[in-house]
Structures are given as C-alpha cells and as structure tokens.
Amino acid sequence: MMYRDHPDLSGFWEDKEGNLIKRRKLPNGQEFDVVKNYPEKEELFGYLEGMAEDIEYKEHIGLLRWILAYRVG
Image 1: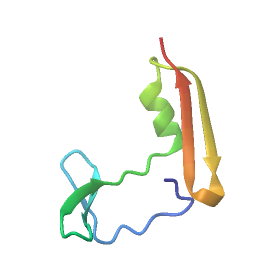
Image 2: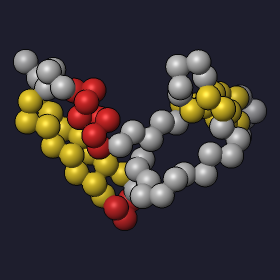
Image 3: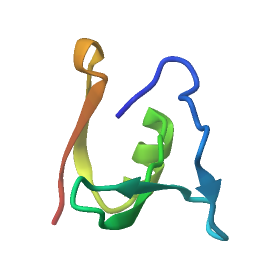
Image 4: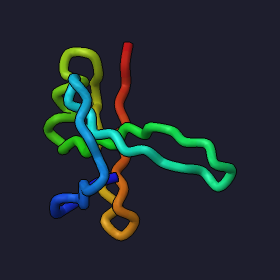
C-alpha cells in the first residue's frame, strides 16, 4: 500500500520496534493484530542495499499499490 498523503492511523498503536498495529475482527469473531507499515521508496531501497541488484520500483497510483522487483545472488 502506498499513500501520497498520510494514512488515517486512528485505532493503531505502535509496538516497541516501531511497527504500526491494528486489531482486526473477522466475521467469525476471531481477532488478529495486523502490522501495517507504509515504507517510502527510499526506505525499501535501503533495506536491499548490498543484497540485491537491478531493483525496480513501480507505482500503481490508481490501485494505491507498488511493486518492488529485484535480483539476488
């Protein structure tokens, strides 16, 4: 998921590692804590620095999605 503006973070909390977490309830009543982080392009590239080659980042604005492709090894 990508956001051009800041996402609505109401109902989220932050764990000790800085992850944003929100509790979700399924129709059957089960509840799960879901991690929702929103990295920027530069942050993603930083994670892969020294481990990946031919990194490609493509944004799909209408779908609010991004794709990150890379080669390792």
